[in-house]
Amino acid sequence: MHHPVEPESLDASLTKAAAILRAAKRVAVLTGAGISAESGLATFRGAGGLWEGHRVEEVATPRAFQRDPTLVWRFYNLRRANLATVKPNPGHDALVDIEKRLGDQFTLITQNVDSLHYAAGSKNVLEIHGALRRVRCTRCTRITERGTEALPDLPRCDKCDGLLRPDVVWFEEELPKDVWRPAVEAAYQCHCFLVVGTSAVVFPAAWLIEAAKNGGAKVIEVNLERSAASDRADVVLLGPSGATLPELIKRL
Ligand code: BJW
Ligand code: ZN
Image (cartoon, rainbow, N blue to C red; front, side, top):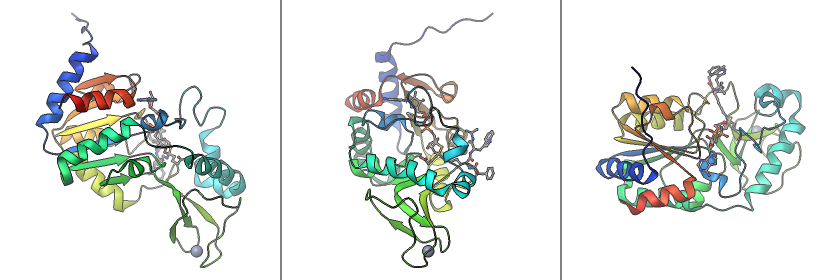
C-alpha cells in the first residue's frame, strides 16, 4: 500500500540540510539561472523566461549562428549590456561564506554565464556553459575578455579578422573539457552536493547530480518549486535562494 509522505516543514528541512552540510568535509554546488533571479536576471524556462516566445534552436545553437549571426549577436549583446546593471544577491553571498569555511574543499559549478559568482567573491568557480563577458574567434579560436562593453552586431577578431562569437556553450556543443573534467571530479568526490535554482533538464550538467549520488554524496536542493532534481535529493528546500541559502548558513 502507498503511504503518502507528510511534507516536512521548511524549518525541519533546513535543520536537516544544515546537519548534512556541517558534516561534509568536501562540498560541491551546482547553480542555475534561479540563483540570479533575485538579482533581476530572467531565467530561461517558464513564464517571463528568456526563451518565452523564442524557439531555443533559433538563438542557442551553432546552426542558428551560422544562419543569422546578427540576430544571435543582438540577443547576446542585449544580455551583455544588461549584465552591467545587475549585482550579486544574498544567495551568491551565502556560497562565498561556505567557501570561506571549506577553502579548497569547496567547488562551485555553475551553468550561469553571468559571472555573478565571481562578482560576489567566489574563487573556485567552474563556468561549465561559458561566460557572456568572453568572446571567442570562430577562425583562430582565441578567447578574450570583453566585459559588458557594446560590441557591433558582427564583431571581428583583432588578430585574424574572423567572426567572433559569444564564448558560451550552445546546444549540441561539447562542454569545455578544462572545466567539465574538474566538475565531474568535484561532484563525484564531494560529501554534500547542493543544487540551487536549476530546472535540471539540460544535460550533461544535470548528470552531475547522478555523479554526486554515485560517489555517495547527500544531495540538498534549493528551488522555488520542485524540479527534475527533486526526486534524487535527500532534502528539498522550497523557497527563493536569496533567503533560503542565508538561512541555511545561519544554522551551521
Ligand atoms: C529559483 C528562483 C529563486 C527561479 N530561487 N530558485 C534529448 C534528450 C536528452 C538530452 C538531449 C536531447 N537532445 C539534445 C540533448 C542534449 C542537450 C540537452 O540537454 N537538451 C535538453 C534540453 C533536452 N544538451 C546539449 O546539447 C549540451 N551538449 C551536449 O550534450 O554535447 C554532446 C552532444 C554533441 C553533439 C550532439 C548532441 C550532443 C550543451 C548544453 C548547453 C546549454 N546551454 C545553455 C545556453 C547557454 C548560453 C546562453 O545563456 O544563452 O545554458 S541552455 C540554458 O539552459 C543555459 C542554462 O545554463 C541551462 C540550464 O538552465 P537553468 O539554469 O536550469 O535555468 P531554467 O530557466 O531552466 O531553470 C531555472 C530554475 O530556477 C527553475 O527550476 C526555477 O524554479 C528556479 N528558480 N527563481 C530559487 N529565486
Ligand atoms: Zn581570430
